Structure formats: C-alpha cells, structure tokens
Image 1: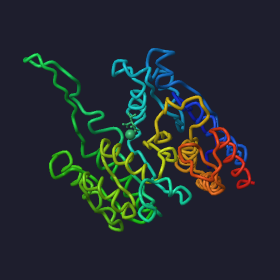
Image 2: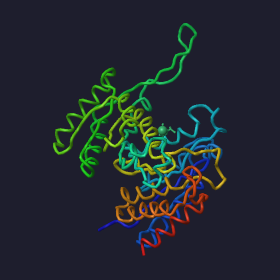
Image 3: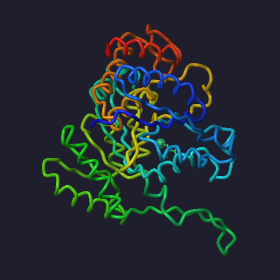
Image 4: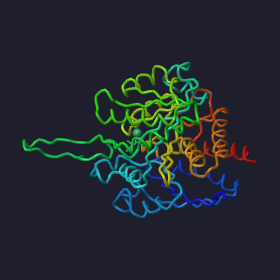
Amino acid sequence: MKKNNFKIAVFAGDGIGPEIMKEALKILKIISEKKNVNIQLNEGLVGGAAYDHYGTPLPDSSLELALCSDAVLLGAVGGPQWESLDYSLRPERALLGLRGNLGIFANLRPIVAFDELLDASPLKKNIVQGIDIMIVRELTGDVYFGKPRGVKKGNDGKRRGVNTMAYSEDEIRRIAVRAFEIARTRKKNLLSVDKANILETMELWRDVVTETGQDYPDINLKHMYVDNCALQLIRNPAQFDVIVTTNLFGDILSDEAAMLTGSIGMLPSASLGEKTALYEPIHGSAPDIAGKNIANPLATILSVALMLRYSLSLPREAGLIEEAVGKTLKEGFRTRDIYQKNKKLVGTEEMGDTVVKKLRNLVN
Ligand code: IPM
Ligand code: MG
C-alpha cells in the first residue's frame, strides 16, 4: 500500500531561512490538503539559532528529530555574529553533522535555466539557453570528513594545517551507482569529474566509476579533469547532462554552474541517503537582506518539489509546483535578485503567494 503519512523535520535556520521557509510551507500545505496526504511538520533549531539557544549548532534534539523523519527541509544557516566562534561551534557545522549522521551521501543539484531569466545570466543567452545539468555531488567523504585534520604547532614553533582527501572504493561505488541510475532517467550521459592526473585518491575514483559503468552499458560514460570542467562550464555548458564528482569539487562546480542560470536564488537541492533525505536551497542565509521581505523564496519552494519527487513519491505534484513557479516567472513576477526592467518587483511573501495562487489553479 502506498504510504501517505509522512514526518518532515523543518529547520528554518538563520538569516533569510525563516522567511523563505514560511513560503515553502504554504506550498506544502496545499499539496497535503489536495492530495489527502498526512504531512506532520516538526520544527527544530539548527545553526546559529540553535547555538544561541542551546550553545551548539546541532543539538541532540534536532538530530533525533531528523533521524526519525522521512525527510528534512532546511532553510539556511550562518551569519556574521557567529563567525568568530570556535570552528566546532559554527553554524555550518550543523550541516556537516546532519550530512554525516543522516548518511545522506548523494547531493543532487539540478541546474536548470528558466527561459524567462536568461537575461539575468552573466553569460550570453545563446550559451546558457536550454541548459539542464544534474550535478551529483558526493557529500559525506573527501577533505570535508577525512582524517587527520586540524592546525597544529610543529617542533619549529610554526603552525601547520592539514586536511585529508580520502575515499574508500565503497564510497565511490555507491555515489557512482546513484549517478548512473539518474543518468538512465535522463539523456544517458554521465561525466565523472576528478583530478586523476595528480591525486591517487582521484585515480581510484576514476577506476571505480569506470568499473561501475560495466553494469550500465546503456550509459555513455566520460571523464574530465576538474580544472577543464570549470572552463567548459563557461565555454559550453549545454554539453553537460549528469555530472558526478567529489565533495569538494562538487561544492565549487555547483556554485559556478548555479551562476549560469542568473541567480543562485533559484536553485534547489536534494541530499539522499539510504534511509532519509534532506532538501534545501543551494544559496546561503544572506544575513544582509534578512528580515526585509526581499529574499527569493523560489529555491526553497523548488526544494519542496524535489522532496515530493524523491521522498513522498508524488512526482506529478512535484511537476505542478515547478510549473507554478514557471508561470509566476512568465507573468513577470520578480524578487530583487532576479529583477529585470519592466517586470513586477515583489517581496518574499508576495512571490510565495503568487506561486500559491498558480498552484491552486493547477491542482484543482
Ligand atoms: C554547500 C555549502 C556548504 C558546503 C558549507 C556551508 C559548509 O557551501 O552546501 O555547498 O561547503 O558544503
Ligand atoms: Mg557550497
């Protein structure tokens, strides 16, 4: 029988997190009412907000909440007031703690350019038109988690910093399998990005991805070095379909690719594990514009769509949310980050309410 009871942990976080989350939850409410799915929302604190309240960016209560949920919806974390804290107490540690403890090793970052926003891209229209890239970033390994790590004083009295790039073949295989499976649902092209010309860990990465490819003869697998990939993303982004890469390279390439679409304020992400998943916008907490009702809620709204698709088995409704966002843009509604001349400048709330209206018409 199809499951129709879901527990979702909601962590709005810091900065613009609470305002954009509010709009995203309006969208979720419509779907739960219309589809008769019972979605239980449990809110918790993470990031700077959690530090201020509990003295730690990821309190046990929030981690427990996440662990017993079907999915986690997250706004954003971080802000200047927490930047001088010890590294282990910074808001960003909450993200790494959630990723590690939930085992959400596959981070999907779809980079899709909405036709209506092509003028907002810093690149020429003919270069970015039609791009549809899925970046599959490994999320629980690499220098982010490798040991040893830290800064220590050596015998000469001088400090030395160390982080470790490390991947086991099992870690590489499981992300490769996810990427091949995703490529199968798309144009069947998979590009693995590494730095195998200089790093042994990356040589292993390339070998294991190639071996995994033997089980996917229908997928066209290619390899590229990360520096060349950074260049090709600007030169000819339309060549890419699915990209699978490591934690650090994926972090950097996904920010670069996000900018192709004109605004990082538009892009959602999904982080999938064996048991649960986490959904969040790619952008950060933008403390400079927090509380002003000018932030763009669309990336968080689109993250709700990804949650319906990957965790709630509601792909049709996910598509309707994406369609509602497309219609909203087509009618000229723009938040400040994507504003163009002669369009309708709206705030966070009005943008959310407009998508809500479009969605209501679509689901009825
Ligand atoms: C991201 C962010 C995080 C990362 C930071 C905030 C820890 O940049 O999700 O891309 O580096 O993974
Ligand atoms: Mg990043």
